[in-house]
Image 1 (cartoon, rainbow over the protein chains, first blue to last red):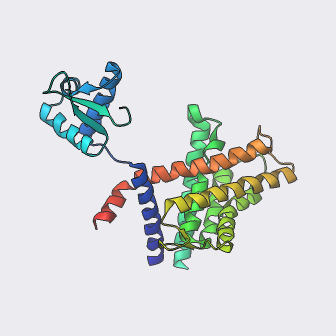
Image 2: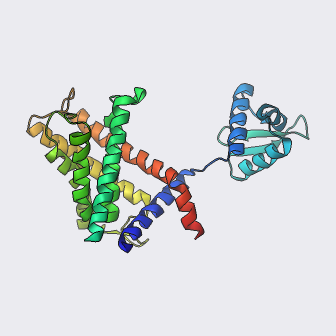
Length: 98
Length: 190
């Protein structure tokens, strides 16, 4: 029985390596909603979106959107850059779309 | 003996479930209907079970290969599949034997020439075994004037078997790594 579990463990390590290289991850419901809103807004704007647009379109509180955006930025899914037109506003770019 | 039964049952269940899933998608899912040859899931069961459980997984896998087409959907293939299923299952041990004879023995450490904990090495085994499977099965079919329904045994079929085995296995691996992510996380935390 131990041998069986040892074999399963090896298979799990192999799948773990694949999962890490593919960067498969689970979004939380908030992350999913914010990410979906960013994708939609960027498509509508044909470019970057700003945080106010994401707050308005997602229907979530500003603080929740901020926290989620920071997390997505930290994980390299989006880039946050300061707007040249309005210094108080940040622009959101999807990584790979810039 | 106990380990042999557990391995056999695992191989049988895994192979059967993948065949049933593949068959369902091949026959019922609109966009993929009739295109099942390009994503043959059960090859993943052959590779995973033989790489991780060894040659004692062969009987369970072979029964699993026969179970779907003979019990779930009798008459799915227009000829007896006893030989073709055996060739398909044996394509993985054949690959491992060939690699072993070339000096790439299967192990589970970083210094092993063929490390079963490294998915790239497992993909190499998948790639070579898919080649053996597609060539040998189609060779057997053409030598015995057999063919799948509405299909001609030619080079196109060899290529589609090859692509189907690889693509099906990759899909199963990705699905498993996604499905087993919570278990992997838990194992890492312990």
